[in-house]
Image (cartoon, rainbow over all chains, first blue to last red; front, side):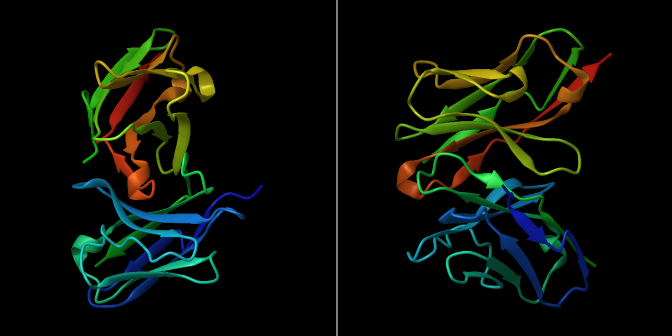
Length: 113
Length: 114
């Protein structure tokens, strides 16, 4: 079946602009995660959605970052007033309800000029 | 709190020789442990997972890892390296009480020489 998809694959934006990154999880997966991969920080957890529960936002680096998940499926990560330090690859993953393995999308490479 | 330490940032082997990528973990709970691989400009691919069943876990492409609680280790091995194994490898831990969010090691870059 289809894996996790993300769009766009690349995004170049100017400092101060807002961006939206999209994630389509594997059909039937109830858990969805966002991570960020950058040279200086490695791979970091950002936010986690599970079913209708309140999301775990403990990894979001600032209040400029937010995410939502509509209808228990597609998720959008929004970064407001982008800064150069936001430049990174943003990865989305989903897992079945047993939490045992997460499957990753190809990522969105964000470059803030 | 959970954490993982990958003991080597870079490992270089010759094609056909064994691969050993070392990982130590720290967890207050019975952890789930994973190895992921990332080829250049590609996404993360799950190699194998340990979730408290058999301590020797077999994964894809001939890789395996052994969970050793006494040593808090989860080293990744392969008997014979192939050129296509060259990639970045991540050791990862998660804890059920944290919704399964993953904590990544810093990664080990594996180079394979002909």
